[in-house]
Length: 220
Image (cartoon, rainbow, N blue to C red):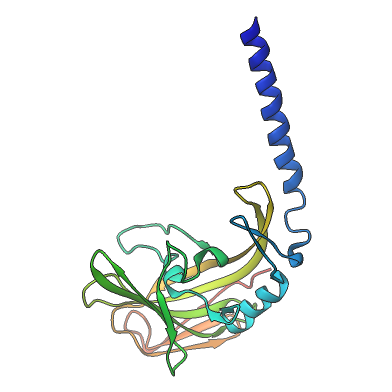
């Protein structure tokens, strides 16, 4: 009898807690420009301004978006389907454990991250070559997974602002970068990629053509 009462009480507590999470979820993005609590640390950040900075300069608080985190969204060549398609900008900076790296920008504007993994130095880099007419970012991305091989990709991505419930239950605004598309362009591909409206033109084409044009549907 006592066991049944205890289980009923426990079920009521769980129901109230889950219901509370659902109520909080209704207002996830409300007040996002007022800052938030990140991993238990109070951080005053104008999220709308940070989103604008990302969209216009591809930087977060004056620092380049971490190339190591950007390349975490690339599909593996050994898999038929892509894996991760988004990163949390604040949670993937170069001073985090998962995405730690030394990041620098060269004279050509290419951002590079260098780190050590399994006793080897690895690097990843990207160059922002422009935007489609709907604001989608177009990047040349280069990845070294060990040894001397460097794999080049073209990535299309968008930045966004939403929110989530943090580990401590507080509402946390969230800046995201979401990969819209990524294509490997072949080892050694360094030729021209031009943007016109919603179209990308590769010269030469990726399969040996004189050129190849790909048009993307505009984001709503």
